[in-house]
Image (cartoon, rainbow, N blue to C red; front, side, top):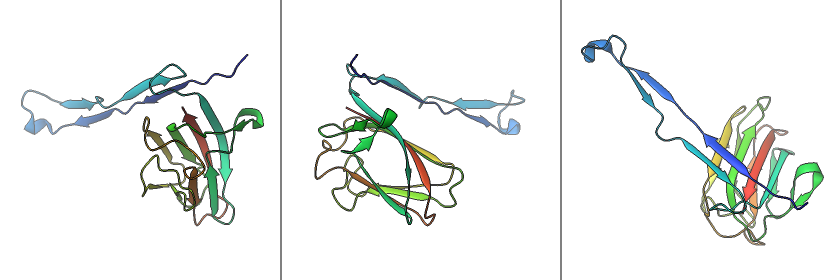
Length: 166
């Protein structure tokens, strides 16, 4: 049986605001619920954008640094996964709560992946999670467009990755 990949992305945020009752005549506990910016979708080989490969793995930093190469990922059961010729459709990164400092994830200094812009950089605090859903952004992963650099003052920080490509 051939491998298939599907990603269900659900980014649900509900913010309930309790307003000042004195400023809202006729309401004893006026509430406003904000939930109109939720995102929910399923991506697979026939969706737009398509997802045809995925990799889920942990990455430990050594001496406070590591590089993720999108052309040489390790997937389920140690399977080799390459994103060559594809684009990252969904990137989820979780910083372990036991980490003692934020980890910076940025476009690689050498052959940096441009899918999130030429100046991409995000700090993920211990216990934090970043999810990027940016369909068809950047150019295809290849020899000169493939790396994300990880740095932290926590010399052995650990990040958990889920990457869906197509």
